[in-house]
Length: 443
View 1 (tube, rainbow, N blue to C red):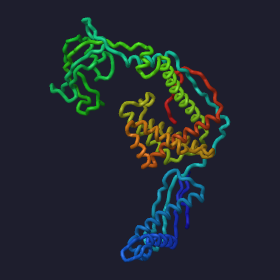
View 2: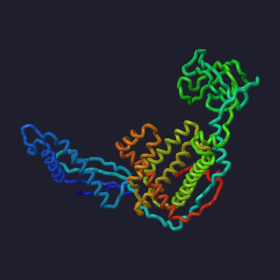
View 3: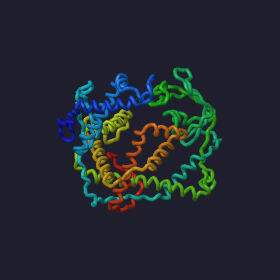
View 4: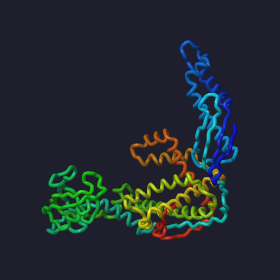
């Protein structure tokens, strides 16, 4: 095999590789003998089919198989001998070799991973923010439970509906005077000042009395679920049945029992644990962000352009979607496209570099993802789709690349945990508001 280097610029490498025709023919003959030995044809005993017949029937397919295998082996050998690790799928162009008796010659271009030296990590110093679940926070959650268990009392006094009242109404929705599908209902509770209805619907019912009728006009939102109504104007014939006022359930042991607990104390204890679990997740995000910021200044190697391009394209798809939905972050709204692209490309480059550094740290310290960890991740993913768990498991079984998509985050978190254990960590008590004040993610 002859290898000629044709490109060496930065992380880009190119080679022309030639394999003599005799070597290809030898591999092809060996493979044809294997094929012939496995053939079952009328008139021949098993394993006694002549190679000439196998060549006649399957020669072209076998040659293609041999060429593909030869290219793969030669490419792997070339990279291994030079200690090169491809950053992506190499680009291979076949020059010759398709015809019998011809040398196999092909050109390959690839981008390689940079040489990564794990930096000195002995000076890592991090702050772990901690917040306690206050009685007020617990009270607010329990009060929300009580609100969900509320009952409604009919208002007997003769008065108009005001904010906070719940109005029971019958209505008929019309477009151009014609009722539309799904626009008619009876005895529907509408909370004045509440959410859940088309903008302007509840607002126009405010001030109505029991027994009163009225025609209101509203405009459906542009993103409304029914395309035939989205952005359209419609009228509703409204008839008020009665006015009711919501009464929150008393916060006591009976409320707790309705929710499946023995008493109020047990309910509050669960709420406290849930709040503290949320705080722990926020704390984890903060210390991980601080760790990655510290590592970012230690990444003194170039990032493969192909990997940066792929990462940027994923980011930019989300940015474009947010821009179309008018959901860009405030700091991005006034930026032109060129500035946005430049900013997010820097983020993509940072992510690629950090990913490569974490991978190298994990490799050097023999950090791996176990089958048990992958199994737990698959089960957790399946639990997100109630009633379809079996289909999710089958999807993972049939798509190895989907399993690999779970491996990456697990591996990264294990490396992060390793580095946090390695670092000097100072715990700091903060308020929940300070803990929640996380800068925009660019990791």
